Image (tube, rainbow, N blue to C red; front, side, top):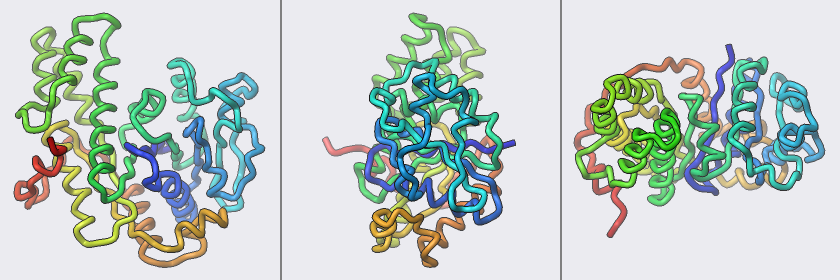
Length: 321
């Protein structure tokens, strides 16, 4: 069975596509069969990182009914065991997808033959991005050690859960209105969490509370802190993990910390994956993250770190007034 891992970010410029490609290359060099899927529609550029010309049939053709299946879009790369599905192929309007188009792609992804399928999603929290993240509970959120980026990463996780819970109920229903109103209120510092929402839905029907709690227990994304420059930057992933547990009720996995390196921009310009030409702290971090991914077994609950309670997470997550 393949592992489908969407890679997202709350904002652009955090190195999401760079990490997607280099994680894929690293997994392939570990002997895993990997398919990279460029789902950053409207801004597809994964081919550039791989040194592949933007002339291949891709997702844009599929959405425009010029390709019959995702399987027909898979092309080999120059790297053994690494394959690629291109993005929009310069089709205009590919980023504007109907919900049923997204569902068709999501239903076909498990049929692709690979150990790992990495989905490079667009940046931000639009439905066309979040809807590809929700179905696969072990997605990755990439961020950098900047307050705005960390807050955007937290907002992405919160939006994904809100969207998932909201879509669990019929249109125009009392339950959808309750969910929508709940997320209009500030969670941070209020003493409420998504378990509070579960309890309120449970007052309508006890099964609703159980459904929400089940969603929270199996939603097990990971976070990668990219472009780190100091020891203190490492703690930001831990902070995000704590606040996600306290406010959202999810077990966020801190997958790793990747140092900033001068050679990254040169590797992008040369259109060659960084980890093919370097052996340094960055590539070692990628290898550690891939080993962790390969051994990861979801758990319904993960205890907080022993010193989590010492973190001033409330002041950290609240934006200044």
